[in-house]
Image (cartoon, rainbow, N blue to C red; front, side):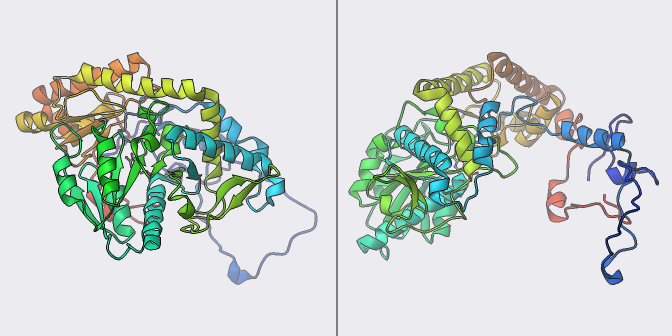
Length: 495
Ligand SMILES: *Cc1c(COP(=O)(O)O)cnc(C)c1O
């Protein structure tokens, strides 16, 4: 483990156990002279419970100090490419926490939950409108979960066509998010990789060569993980359909195109969205999320259960499509996230959603232009929501790696960008400023990145050891992953 640099006034620098003083208490419980509740049998009791002994003030300072060490979107710019760490309006949290939503019981009869169900139905309709794909299930709890739903739907459709035995391959671009090939493999398909051409779009010749009656589907990310528009996607859709296969869309980064381009119009059969990225849910650390799947008429019978529908009496119900792939999780999906998405969509309206995508694209291009020339830019053309630079020049000329650059950015006051992804860009630095950063924040980020490019020439060792200002310095990540120390142990050296 690395050097630990406690500051004497930093209450978070020591564990609560190490800060304890025998006899201190956070609360005083008055003695009780009423009736005593009998204690359980002695063998169920412990003589000693090792708890830190702190005063209430000490405890509050300890947790407050710890909370301030967490860097989040509420603390500053968080340019983690592909993840869309944007600022989410607090009013969406407020709406989701209204007692009518927050206390609704998932097993209430539909007649008693019409408020929540109708809200979800409206969201379903809105997402159908935005994607141009009329049928939607809100059930999946994440992007990867939505992908699995979509590929399982394709599996069932092929089964009904009697072609599941022969169509065993799924084409996946080499720039894809890892969840795409993982999903295809998990659903039992073989993955065929499609290379990216020099312009950052898919290599058409390879697609044409690979397409035959053994292909079940192709998964395409729009906009792609280089932050680029997928040139010729409509022709690719035609080719896929002529070959009898389905076109799956990874719509995780909808914030770049929403209100302007619809997956259904491009020829996609099924797409998942990441509501926690594009539609206002603070996310990170693995949750919470919602990855609805939207699909064409043809694939609608296979959608995961439940699907929201309105009957003739105007009652909203949860139904199971006739050839549904089944349930992906309990109840109706991640409702708190869905309500936030609804609030976000309604607050902005179509014009507002369009303004969001315009701003996302403007911000990413502003950053691209500001940083241009200081880092290599392997696909040098206007981008959509994010821009992927490369640290190869810094590595070649100064022995500084992207990893060092990312760690040094912490010292300059920013959260690092996504690194080493997409895999087709060496020493990748994938930066997404998002639509909610003001110009001065983008300028400050570019300044920091340019300063670091200068430091890599003048003082590479500072980068090799970074970060210097964080509570923990450079970690041995392999040891941390292989021998994690996850809890306090009284007699063990936690180093
Ligand atoms: C984030 C992301 C995913 C995965 O979404 P999760 O919600 O993390 O499962 C898939 N594809 C792309 C392009 C993404 O950015």
